Image 1 (cartoon, rainbow, N blue to C red):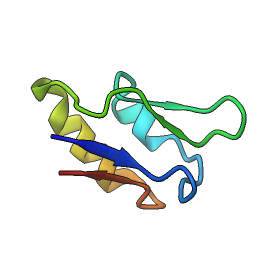
Image 2: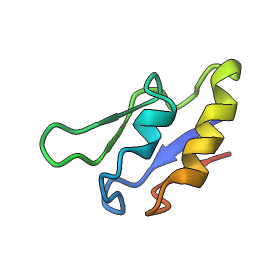
Image 3: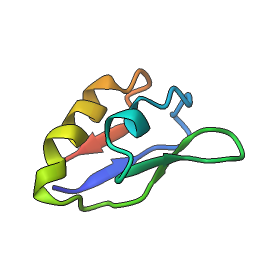
Length: 63
């Protein structure tokens, strides 16, 4: 799986960080998403997909 984020689209809700803090973080400057791991481990994939669906701005994609 490969994860991509669009920080310009992010509204800083933080759902991604709550769902998978090993893959996502938030910028201290403006609270937008920071991608920590573009290729998460297989055991993290389910949570990453949950984060994709939970993002209110649709700023995260996974393929």
